[in-house]
Image (cartoon, rainbow, N blue to C red):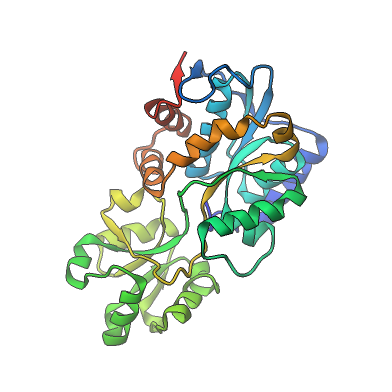
Length: 326
């Protein structure tokens, strides 16, 4: 996703990516689905093309990578599936080096992790434009973004919020000032110490939480604790996580726009895009339909219901009319 998977295993992932790109290997498997154009891909504009799609190794990004592959396949291309690469850096290097042709990336990841900027841009479109313009030098073409924003947030159970009526993080700051003992929060270790995590959020909103009120745990446990126990009034979540709806949580609005935007947008190896500029016409309509709410629903099918990411992607594309079964 956006912030959560960027930081895990970067060194090993980079080594693997360099190995794959340096040796010219294209691991993966052919996409064999019998799909034909729906509202996109008419005339099969990618006939004769051989394209490789990739993704990071978490559910949402795998689903998005599968969508690109299925759209390419319906448009006539032969598609090699290299989704589910370990870590962000592996997939990034595949796009930069040409080991893969396309994937969905996140604007905040591009700006902060790959391009090295410390301060995010609050306006989502301006953030994308800045990434698009600067990443051209790396041979990466960013296509228009979706409104799907996979960023940090704090959430509260609907049950507990019936008492507090919190809507924004500013509301949390007010509550913390009036009743400090009420604001207990469950977070991951890293979020608890990062400037773009809890310490920065406290500073931005002018709140100070007692150390005893901050409980550190694995990400997966946070959702359960916020939903089913009283040990955490609030929990660190990711805005597109399918467990938000499944566990009846309410996401609080980041009304001061502290957390970076992590809007999903297709990125294409620039030489591939020069050869097949029609890729933009194929993927733009898909991106326009991808919202945070859609991502929550699709992620829940994988992470809550245990469905296969490829089938989830295919079912959604067919449901939306982008492609059809052959």
